[in-house]
Each structure stands twice: as structure tokens, then as C-alpha cells.
Image (tube, rainbow, N blue to C red; front, side, top):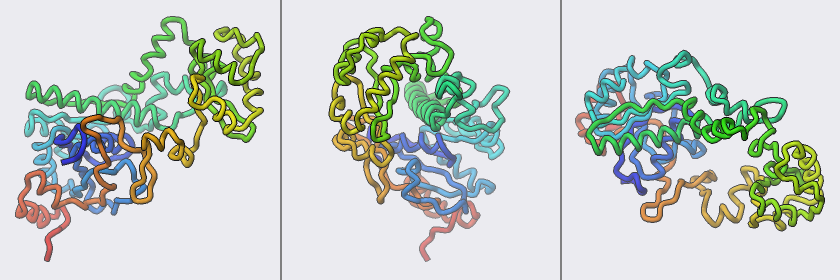
Length: 382
């Protein structure tokens, strides 16, 4: 049994890339027993740097084999949820679609992760994170005045995808436990990214948001909510929105220019931005951190991936951990009574064929028959 609030939850994950593995990691970190179905002969896996694969066990199956398909269905019979991220129709062609799975396990929550969703004109088209957030307005809103800039793949894959699938799966499991009825969760990254934009669509409707980049309070348009380069070429972030925080910003920077009293005058923002940039450029990042760090200015240094794990706040909260020499984020969020933990390293493909199947109710002879049929590798000890 895994450690965490999801201990006892059983998930079958069909191997994929991006948001699917990240969703599996999130569930595993909180204690779920996640068995990943990998492709037999698909490589070795198990590299410590494959962070989003941590904490689950791998069973490698040849899904062209009827015995392997039946094995998947038997695993689904015992599972609370499924994660799959293929294009619409692929699982059905394999004989593993939701209709078949739910017939075998009516309480199953069948999670489908795609970019465009199971329906719609783009449903069968290829795409990546940037494309999925492009049709939601999110990509248009992020970037410089010259062009939209992809915000890594945080908004589509991980925010709009993996987190919404984890949320949807757990909601479905609660419903299934109350009613005995499972269901399909159609998780489209484009839907999730649109959902993440809810506040901004509200701002636009209220006349508080210009449909332009760097023209608004939260997109770098306001001088009091942006990043600034310091004397040493490093950067700091300033988010002094509220009047009392803004007043403290002026105090800490030594700004006495009366022009800065027009905080919410959009027309003044470009000029005030340039003036504040000149002030910030007079000191190093370390100097500004000494002056403003930990205060109500709403300030933080902009750290790179080497610096972030060493920041005192992250060290104090153990936000990052090291596993097999690889620095990586610790499980989140925190639970007072049932803390999660990294349940194990990234698995080697097929590294748990016998162990996981035995734990999920298969017998030794059944596993040997699968090996004889070529559905899995032969793990018998000679």
C-alpha cells in the first residue's frame, strides 16, 4: 500500500507522454497504486531523470496479443480508474475502449486525456500544448507586445490537462463509490486551458481587461506587476498590487517622485515602468533581495533551475528532494494526517510484470501462461 491520502486507490495507466505521466505521478505521490501498461519491447526505461514516471510499477504487454488485451481488461476489473492518452478511437480498436471496460467493471472511472477532446472538428488532429491553448485565448494573452510566447507547456499539458484529469478521476471515483456507477472523463487540454482563463473572461466582460498583451495589470503592462533586470543582469519579480504593498514598494526603492502616486492610471504605466526599471537597475539582485525579500512588497528573486532548490524558503519546506542524484519537486500538496511521498523510482519497462500482476490478483500459473503466449516477458526463475 502506498503512503498518502489516496492509499488503496488502484489506477491503470497506459503509457504516454506529457500530461498522462504527470497525472500518474500526482496520483502516485499521494499514495495511489498506479500500474503502468508499457509496450513490450519498447525500451528499458527507469532513468532517474524521468521524473514524471516516478512511483508506479510497469507491466510490459504486447497489445497485439489477445491474451495481453484480456490481461488489461482483468486489471481494469480491479481498478478504480484508468488513464489513457491516445487519439480518439485507438483504445476502441485495441478492444480496450470504455464500453468494453465498463461492461467488465461498472464502477470504473475511465479517464481520457487528449488535446482537443473526444469530439469536435479537431478531435482527430495532431497538436501540442501551444496549439491547445491557442484556441482558448490563453496564448494570445501571454507574451510581449510583439508576439505571443508559449508559457512552457504548463497551461495546456500540465495545468489544463493533467491536473484536470486528476481532479476529474477523483470526482468520478467519489461518485462511483456513492452510486456504484462509473463513467468516462473526457479531459481535453483545450477545455482545461479555457477553464483556467475564467477570471480573465470575467475581467473582459467587466471592462477590466484589454484584449492586448502587456496592456493589463497581470500581463506585465502595469509597472507594479512585472519583472525587472538588476545591476548584475539577474532579475526580480514585483507584484505590488494593493495600495499598502505599493506604498511599501516606493518606500523600499526610495522613490519619492509624485508621478508614482498615479498607480492605476493606465496611461502612466509605460513611463512609470521605465522609471522603475532605472531604479531597479542600480542594485544587484542580492541587494534588492536583502531590502525587499520577505516583506509585504510582494517581491521574489527570479531564480533559475539550479538556484531554486537552494532558496531558503524551498529548503525550509523541503519543496525539492533528491532521488538517485536527481533534484526534483517533492509531492504536493501537503497533508497533515496522511502525507504523500515518492513511492519509488521511475520503473524499468516491464520491471514489475510478475510482482504487480500477483498483487492485482493474478496467479503464478496465469502469469506463466501469459509468458507462454508471448503477451509478457518470461519472468520465471529457471
